[in-house]
Length: 165
Figure 1 (cartoon, rainbow, N blue to C red):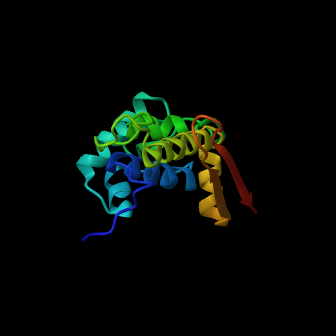
Figure 2: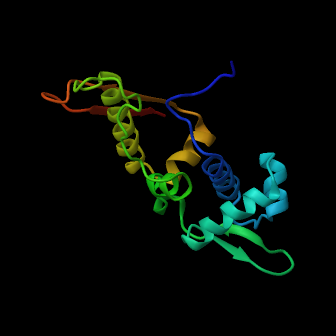
């Protein structure tokens, strides 16, 4: 059985987009071509090109044509909301509940927990900008996300995100 990450099962376009943004953010003055980006990321030039076009249309990166052209960040890192990037390239965060149909009119605690984790991760990303991601790459701080899940009838999700510099 191959390993999975059930909590962070991100689609390939999102992984590619995040890696491309990091590469562009590390050298903001230097335009990078699709070819050089795909080589540094280790991915298909065709797939990356589609992702970069989405980022262009959303206004996060700009394409410079001609000799010396390529892609650059169009916004300062602190103006790029991580939740927006995740939803642009990966789709909306929608709690889906349990996908197993066997509960005989009883709530599924596992589905409820997964929904709470989805909401907590979405809320966490809403508080972070691309600047935070770049700092993570530069400083590699320890990031902890604590989630408390309680029954839907009496509680709510409590999220604590702490970064240690």
